[in-house]
Amino acid sequence: AGENFEKNHDFTATFRPGVGIYEKAMAYGIIGYSRAEFESNGDDEYLDGLVLGAGAQIDSNTPFKPRIEYTYTQYEDETIGGNNFDITDNNVKVGAVFQF
Image (tube, rainbow, N blue to C red):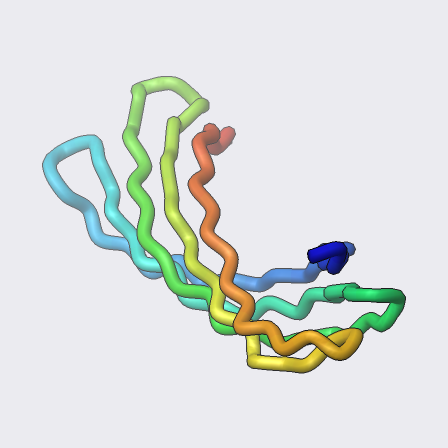
């Protein structure tokens, strides 16, 4: 009770190997690295994380290709500000790629 915990910022680099499915769709996996700053009770730490996920992209016969993806990041366990944390991050992203 009364504990404060926040993620201040992060840097993430990912690799997306994919395979064509059907005529106008591509499925891909995501693997990567994340480094983020977390803060609790005035103490802050930079933690490293493994990023895993999956996504799909559709060819719409226009320069814009809609995509959806899910990523899961598992950060290293750490004690920050006297609190022990097992930190994970889940993200769902919807967007479009402009291809020229």
